[in-house]
Length: 130
Image (cartoon, rainbow, N blue to C red; front, side):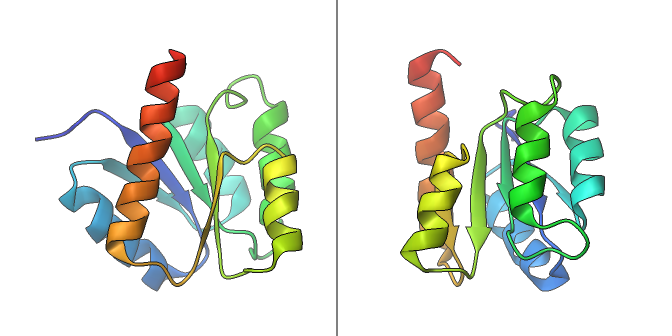
């Protein structure tokens, strides 16, 4: 049974995408993937996800630039974005939050942690009435 929550994951690592897909679909989230920022922005406009999980270290256009593009596009600016990255230093976490990311999830993560963080993001936005 689907819970009608769409999540777009933008990450250039196919193994990470496969792992996240298993985790999220097992919890009945509908998941879409993109391996480049440009593909991710197009997918966000087309699919209108309720959440985007975005890697920072991407080829061609990095996650910071993609985050800025998502927040300046009228079609995607209201979609919450959580950074999903192996960059664990405080500086990057602060940059992510200052740039408008709703959360900062570091790799490696456990399936339980990922589900908990995703569920919490949806709870926050449901309380706000989006």
